[in-house]
Length: 281
Image (cartoon, rainbow, N blue to C red; front, side, top):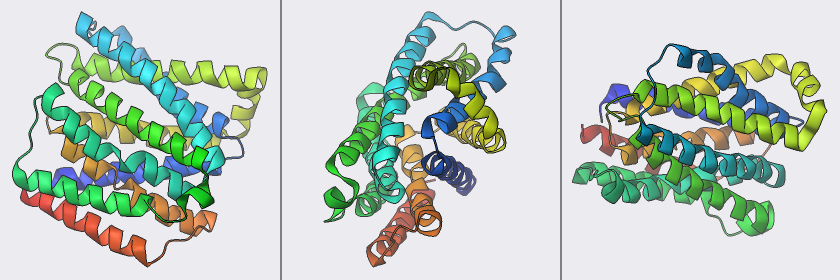
């Protein structure tokens, strides 16, 4: 993986950590998540009027993504409600690279070269160091931990689905736009289900933060989708999920959560993994 692509994914990782921290820190996570997902849908959905239609395979993949992402949204909002940001976010995102890399071998036919596999393994080890700690169950609570792990598993599955979608010979761009449209629709359904008529007035009160969060989320996801359209999805997931390091720093600075020597070591291990991915070309 080239240095330029790694750098671009690190930008995406930063945006991802920031908008997730905004959802965590918001007075109402449902309201802010509605901005994040609905904003991207409203912004990009009009492009469907001029884009070519999706093939049948594309509709199947979009449908699977929609169902999985509905589950992911519910897990995301509830894990932030119950647990510390610097703990539940690493669990949710930390288990994804290994699962994605393994699943991509039979499903997408991707077997990265040995150096890249080593880089993914090293990054995964560093991510696990971030997520796993002796007091995790007492501090974040088992329910929050379980929700985070579930979110990571669902994330891994829809990442593979999206990799197949953005590689369609026909309608790849339409697939990308459809993802934003259905994600916005899904969050609108959940938002009105949870908040009813109070949702729109609440969103209007935080529109400045909401719009900026939506733009960050849209940019982050667009970068990730573009890169996995031509790059093995396992290494992409590994670099992208380094957002947990940034999330941990945000947790320390803004939420007054602890960092510690163990996480400093983990950050160095993750950096070594990124170097290996760069060496793999």
